[in-house]
Each structure stands twice: as C-alpha cells, then as structure tokens.
Image (cartoon, rainbow, N blue to C red; front, side, top):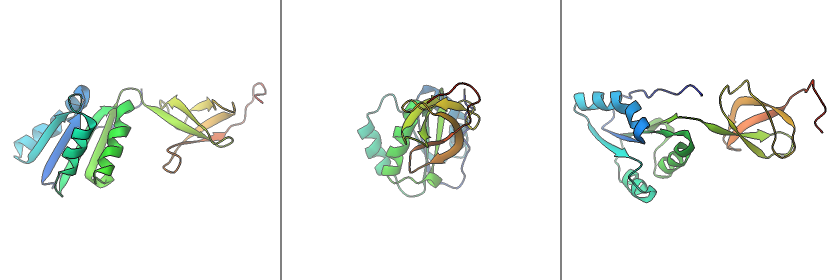
Length: 162
C-alpha cells in the first residue's frame, strides 16, 4: 500500500470544513480536536450520508477564508476533489487525504492510451500497456493534461514483445 499522506493543520482560517468517510474522519480527528480547543468555527460532514448535489450546494455556500479537508478512499477522492474545485476551492484552500489502495492511470508513450495500475512503489514500477503491450517504466511525473502518470518505453532484456 502507498504511504498515506497525513493531514496537516493550516492556521489562520476563519472556518474549517471536514469531510470524509469513516476512516477519513478518524484521520482528521486530531485536527478537529485542535479546532474545537481553539474555539474556531467548523463543520463536519460524513460523506456516506450526503448526496453529491447536497455537498456541492454546501461547498458553494461557504465564505472566503474557509479551509476544506476531504479524507476518503482513493477510489472516491478524485471525484470530490473535482467537485471542490468546481465549487471554488483552490489547491491552497484544501487538503485531500486518501486511504486504501490507490489506482493510477499510466499514459503510454507509444499508443497514447491509459492503463490503470496499483500505485505502490510509484517511480520504480514497470507495467505493460493494456492496448499495445509495450513494456513501460512508470514515471513519478504526473501530467495534468493527460490526467495520468507518464509511462516510458523500457529496454526489455527478456523475450520480444512485438
């Protein structure tokens, strides 16, 4: 399993929003306790109970100076990250913390298709393109344009994979 990013408290905000699944909210508990202790305005939303449209409306109604934490399974986190950006939260106004198995897309340098793989050991991974079967070395470089990590052709010392 990929090393999980630990949430970090960001000081100086007027309000904090904490969203997540059960395990995600557990990981946010130390920060929630700190905010409570310092008597700062906050809200906690369990994402298993809310519809995406409810969450969208809730995020859109927040005021400037609000900081957002979303902690949930990697498989669902990306959708909520896009939702937060659509609602006006920038990368500087939010932290996205994933847990569990993280699947990533690898962009093939030959056929330009994506192959989904487990991200464990990112930067040291080898995989085979699911479309053209080229052996790829998975880079730790993420391309926002491609929405994936870049896969480069690797020298194969074994059998011919044409």
